[in-house]
Image (tube, rainbow, N blue to C red; front, side, top):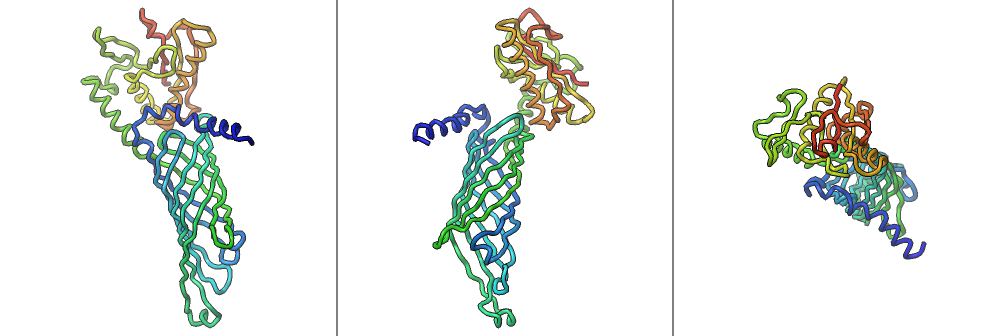
Length: 339
């Protein structure tokens, strides 16, 4: 691969990380905690010491759009494979960095690499007599350590990701690297998304003054504007022109729909997307579908609503929403029908 092609390939991978909508989130929402279980397969020089088997890892890190950085450690303890070696333990301390590539819906791929140091202890006997006398000694070693992984990921909620995959770790010995094939599965949790979301909802509730969404009459919402109060259907959210970006003041309506669906698993929701009658028919249909899909993804990510409970209908401007007034803004909406 030539230098120019290699550079272009890197740009294609990294560019989405700097164009993501994640810049709209608070910086603290990139902090994550990870915990995973791993299984090593002994190979090479390790076969003479022991079978590493199961272990665990924990990490504290930060995700900037698709780029990830973390400090990781863990522990493995396993018996030796010959009579003179009683037990082997090792604890890695590594800096981990990687790239997350969203694919479709909640699915994606993630590639990680790590580099650091490995602290190990070998409990051994020098001779058969030491075994009889239980005269064991502990040898401590420190060695450079590195590794690489490729994972498949599922992100059912903004703050929770499940990942599983495999790769290899390398203990860098003076005689050459010791390769340890590994499989790993774990979870990644972003606590500040949960904390900030609760704070945002509290702020939105206080910003609406005396209006309490849960206790108002069933089918209306009230907007405050420079022209006064405007009454609209409470089961609709509205969007920017020619865009699938929802107007922020309608987020509490979508949140309440999520709360209701989560509280009653028997309920289902139909999302009907509309547009103002401008542009091409295909363009209007695509925008109305993108608006409805935004609502569906939001309900799935923030409230755990299974996609099987969500129906999407996109009408463009082929029909008008149930509520409309003289303004085109009233056509740029998604109706929420909960049944």
